[in-house]
Length: 354
Ligand code: HSE
Image 1 (spheres, rainbow, N blue to C red):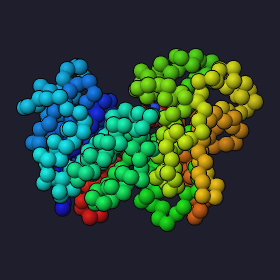
Image 2 (tube, rainbow, N blue to C red; image 1 turned 90 degrees about the vertical axis):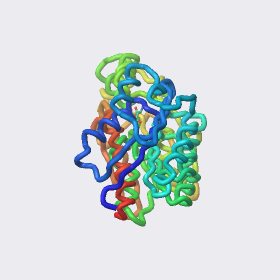
Image 3 (cartoon, rainbow, N blue to C red; image 1 turned 180 degrees about the vertical axis):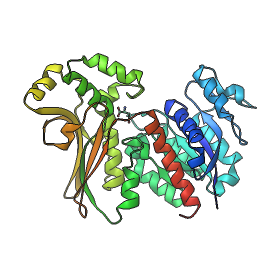
């Protein structure tokens, strides 16, 4: 197959999914696949299913002017995400059978059970679609089940955007570190908390820093997920499940957020040439994995102490390569959208037999 022709289904059409679509258009000449979107499901702006393809400029305009996508549908009706997936798996059965149907899941994180994202992924795989998601829920709550299901139907379940946006973490290990064992990791993996702590160090207020993260679309829809450490716990669970062979959920992670930290605390640490950062870590002890998210007082020589503003970093402890560090200097919407693009490109390469 020279240039695979992919049919995309977008479950969730918020900022990340819309930036993904514009990024596909901007990078068209560099892509190794062509694409159309055949279905979109949103929480607040209706849904549309059109197997022949949707005019995406119009779809983006409609959602950004807070209207309903139903007006693009020939037979508008109330559908949930799962209905859109099933309808398209049926309407695009040939694409699905040939491995050219891809579900892009970008609904918001649900910290109770990872739903409805887990059900979306399951339904898509059952309909023979590949799945790409930036949602942490599926890998954090149901990695092993979904991975086994994907394998059983000869499709892939990819979630590079779940941790550190498009900076390769999962794909780096999968593609370039064969036969390696990851015994643990340590990192700063929540940008919102890192930004708030950096701002507190400069004398700014907690609430103002958080409001800025919300305005820039970096905080979660419910920002308490960031400041209470849940977002980092979900990322930690996804890393433990996918890289360390653990079977945990975010609720297993020992968790303390940054809600109770004050400007005085972080400035006092700075005065002693130290820094407070929200650190996520996991390590193996015998057959058990211990996983934690908590503010740590770091010495200035600690590589995590150099992270400011939106920086993230993850240091993996491996058996054959020692410690491997991955650093992201700042993050934005384009970087999250790029995670989806890079995963879709992997599917295209798989179709080409690369
Ligand atoms: N709310 C998340 C963060 C977004 O601040 O890191 C990226 O996962």
